[in-house]
Each structure stands twice: as structure tokens, then as C-alpha cells.
Amino acid sequence: MQQTGTVADLRVQEITDGAGEVVVAGDTLTVQYIGVLPDGTVFDSTDAHGGTPFTFTIGAGKVIQGWERGLLGMREGGRRLLAVPPALGYGAQANGVIPANATLIFDVQLLKRVPAGTPVTPATP
Image (cartoon, rainbow, N blue to C red; front, side):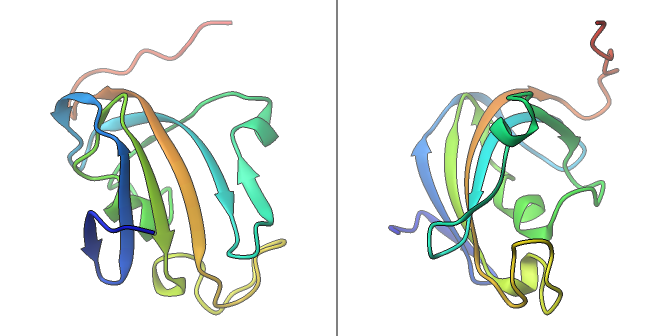
């Protein structure tokens, strides 16, 4: 994986740059993603959740540290590959099909960025 940035052994490869303002802590992000183990085993994806994009607030502690750090600086429409070391993933704890001390690889596309402080309106059915 060619690196475009490193944060505490987190490897980040920018696939598509995106446009607009960069992601900062407190922004609400909507992403499509796939997570795989180094052997190619898919352990999670938006497709596994009915194809529904995943929305969360960066910096709120709702995702692993590899995402908290690795998605900062992205722009809407951008796509990144993240190689997350165990210390920024699930560490020594196994989690479902993810073994203890596993490096996690994510392909993440940022669909939408809502700046921190902007009211987020929940989707209506």
C-alpha cells in the first residue's frame, strides 16, 4: 500500500481526493465502506447492513481509533484505504471473525460531511 500519510502506524492511502472542506473532529460523516482482514476475509461492510450508508460523528468515540484518526482531513466524495494496526482497532480482543491483534484494512468513501455545529436532521422513512 503506497502511503500518503501516517499517524501512529496507521497507513492511509488516498484513492480519490474529493472536494470541499476537510473533515475535522465534530463533523458528522456518512460513508460507504468495506472492512477486510489481511487474508482477504470481509468482516464488515455497508453492503452487509443492507447497503445503508453509515453515519457517525468523528471524535465522538463511536468508531475505532483507526477511523477517528484516518478519516480526518478527507473531503466529501473522497475515498481512502486505511490499514489500521491492532492498537487503533480492536487490540488484543477478538471481535466476531476478527482475531485478536489483527490489522484491519478499510476502503472508505465519504459520501457526505456535515460540519460540526450544523443541526443534523434525521432521515424520514
